[in-house]
Length: 70
Length: 203
Image (cartoon, rainbow over all chains, first blue to last red; front, side):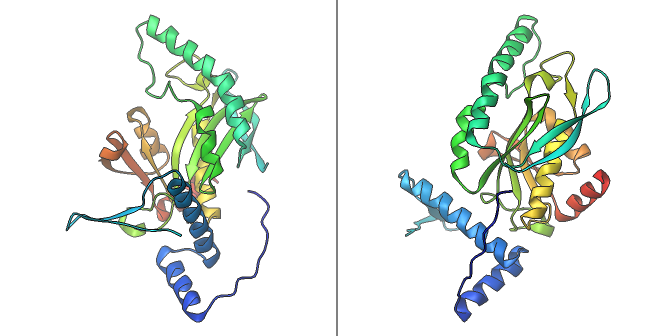
C-alpha cells in the first residue's frame, strides 16, 4: 500500500461518541471508519460534480428524498 | 509501487515460477496492459468464432477505459506480472458495497468489480494456457487487502456463470441471489469466518 502519514484529530465528545458507535457497529477500527468516510465523501462528491443526484429511497412508502451534500 | 513476490505455475513445465503481485497499479499500467491484451483477446476470440467455438462473455472488456476509476480513493487495481508481462488484473472497490450475509450484514467488504486473466492464460480462449494460479492469487490478494483494511477478509463479487464453481468451491464464497441490477449475475460473498478458513487453507 501507499506510504501513510500521521495526523492529530481533535473531536468533541459527541463526535468521538459517534465515531466509537460507528466503529463498533461496522466492526472497524476508528481509523478505518474515517478512511471509509473519506472514500465515500470523495466518491459522492465526484458524482455530484458530474451532475448526478444522491437519493434515499424508502421502499415501503415509495418515497425518494434527495440528499444535499456540501 | 508496493509489490510482493509470489509464485504461479508454468503450465508447460508444471513448475512454480516467480511472479510479482502489484498491490496498487497506476492508471498507465492499465493502458499499457490493454495495449498488449486487447489485440491478443480479439485475435483469440476471432479464431474461436471461425472454429464455431464459444467465446467468453467478457472478451470485450477494455482495461484502458477503466483507468479513470483510479482517480477515486475507493478504487484500486492489483496485478500479477510474470515474464515481464501482466498476467492478471483485478479492480476492487472499498466503499460502494456492504456485506449482506447475516453474520456480517451492513459491514464493509472488498468488492471485486473486475478480475481477468491475460487472454493467453484463459482455457476458454486458448488450448494451452501459459500460467496457472492467477485467479486464486488475485482472490487471495483481495482477502488479504480486506484484512489489512480492517474488513476482516470479507469479499463480495458478481460472478459470470462459468466462474461460479471457482468462487463457490475453490474460494469458499457463499452464493446468494441473482442481482437484477447486475445483469442477473449471481452475487457471491466471503464472510469473516469463511475468509479465516480460506487464509488458513492457503498457509
